[in-house]
Image (cartoon, rainbow, N blue to C red):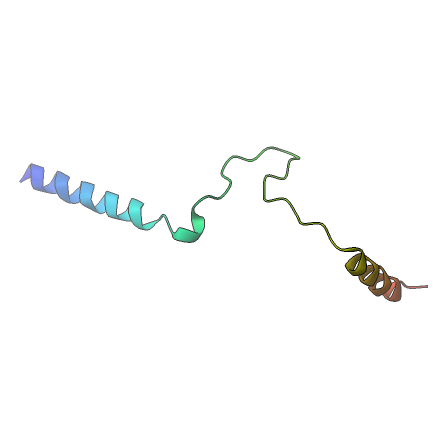
Length: 63
């Protein structure tokens, strides 16, 4: 009887632990360093896009 209870508890705990590891949570950063971005590097913007963004923000400026 005691062994069956222990097995049931172990089975329940293992089921909970295994179901908590969702696919989208895999390979994410778990150890953070203060002041350091640990994510993927950004891609460089093209000159055309930078110019377009500058024009867009200049129109939003208040005088």
